[in-house]
Image (cartoon, rainbow, N blue to C red; front, side, top):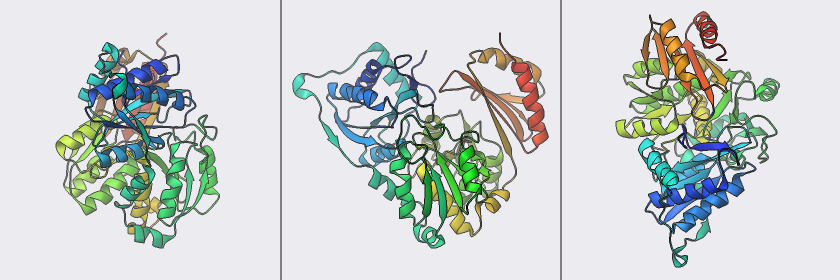
Length: 444
């Protein structure tokens, strides 16, 4: 089985990942890159220090100097790598539950490296062909602060005076994760009055699940409805995306949020958009409005980043609310998205719910079927059932009917099948959901 999934290596300590794997990962990254320095950061999971030390040892054993950035969000490390033109390694499992951890590679431009680079690093890990050095050439460790640089870079992308004039009141949920060291500081820099929850660092994530979903955010939604907030934001575990609630405490679908950001960015500058097949056709309507095109990709930030580079696109995004602005960072960043959301509200002069209502009403239903490994069987069954629908296999199987689609794909982060059903018609979505679940059934 490949070590790398959609975005990095993930697993459970001493079940599917080990300190030995972390050590070999560090040596592989140190062997692949010729640079003398490699940045290293980690999230706050209970296993992160253990695995971080293993990765650090591997890097040092290949003669690399390690720049220890400490416990920070992944995008903060990526911005540091881009600014200093050095590669990086991150110990994190992003939004996965607390028992998971993992490893990510950061390219010298701050992006998630493409499949060709990841494959070469994986080959080094498996083949254990490392450039080890003698005792006199072992690398050194130094510490550096990445947070100040990160905040400054975010603020370059928004109208700070306009945001400050609004005196926004924001509710923020840091998920007991890495954004506890960045988002409160960002909001203060933007002159925002904020109330924070789950803003103490705790690797068990006691406040809620580390993936921000409607189910895990029930308490936040209740809180948001009880007080006058202009906006509420919830981060995932490593801070590369954000989920928002409007001023009424209603959840804003990530698909619509990224479309709103795309509309805002295209008012400032024209350029093509890069979005995965899991995003609804709403983004196509935004592109048509501004006379640009949408380039479709498989799901995952690394491939979106790669296509943004090759196509010189203006912006990329994912239906989960991840926004990618390559001129800032060719990767998702929840902190940037918070600043952009406030910028959009302040420039629009209206509440965010009214701005969202102006968008075409495309809906997107997401379903996860856990512990399933029969994807090929399911794909065949759906092809046989929906012969009247156009289909593509850019990522899994997407069945298209006018402006509606069914997408089924293997999860790249866990043993599961993911289903996306999108349409402007709620009835169409309900009917297809019932049909698809009946077709998939129980493999036993």
